[in-house]
Amino acid sequence: MKRLLFLMALILMACDEGKSVYIADSSGNLNMVNIISENQLWDSKLGEDIRDLMAKDAEGLPQKEPLYKLRHIPNKAFTGFAKKNRTFLKFDLGKENKITFAKDSFARPQLGIFIKGRNEDELIKTFKDNQNKILNAINNTEISEKWRRMNKSLEDDTKIKNLLGISLKFPTAYRFAKESNDSFIWLRKEIKKGSMEIFIYEVPVTKIENENSVVSNIVKIRDSIGKSNVPGPRPGTYMITEEAYMPYLYETKIDGKFAYETRGTWVVKGAFMGGPFLNFAIKDEVNNRYVVLEGIVFKPTAEKRNNVFEIEAIGRSAKFID
Image (cartoon, rainbow, N blue to C red):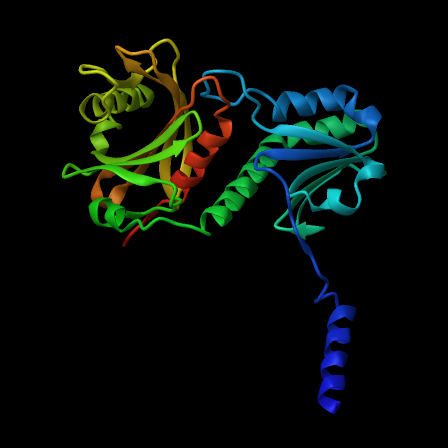
């Protein structure tokens, strides 16, 4: 009895100190962002600016798809289950201009971005001044959530470790479609109306860093890989980069290492096939090479944004083995 009373006392003390407050699991689809504000703000210039930034066309897709799907929730409806949404931005008029990035305010895991302003113009300014931070924070949150979901059922990556010296997280839905002695690995996932492919290989640093532009070198490399390793549906057909559109090139970091991120469209030379690709070229200075992880999606007439996002999550999970 004394032991029970002692335990109850400890629990009450912890509650008083805010240490045992129950936080519910968050919910929500990937890449869905909830916008919390009064209706008049959502229907005004602020709402337009939010949609222009967050629902703009995702880059590198063959058809228009929004970067994020948005759902507006009026302030008075932001209660109960609505507070469990994993990612939200909340706009309020107040006595100061302020932006706060909060973690696990009402659920876990959760990112809440609170923006306050003395009037609508100042809300807009604070939002625009921090737009890159906002997009990065949301993308990092969604990548982490995708990793959490993938961790429930991971495929064995021993073959990748042995051949290329990196570890990689990818679901058991993928299978090894091709492995070769020239350090080329091909993973495939069958999906409704198509498939997703991931290619992993290495190239010398000089293949990307030379007198030519980086983006043209990456296109040349992937076209060469496509011709030698990724055949099309008929003899003499193979994967190449869509020539009509220049890919988007960015600089990023993966496992603390410098990397190029390239987004664009692939087609099959000699056949009517195509779709988006995402290519990461990660610099491994110790071994004087770039490790390339590229994913493509074949899913005619259907949305592909979340498929490319899955490829991004897999690529960003790469870690070099010492």
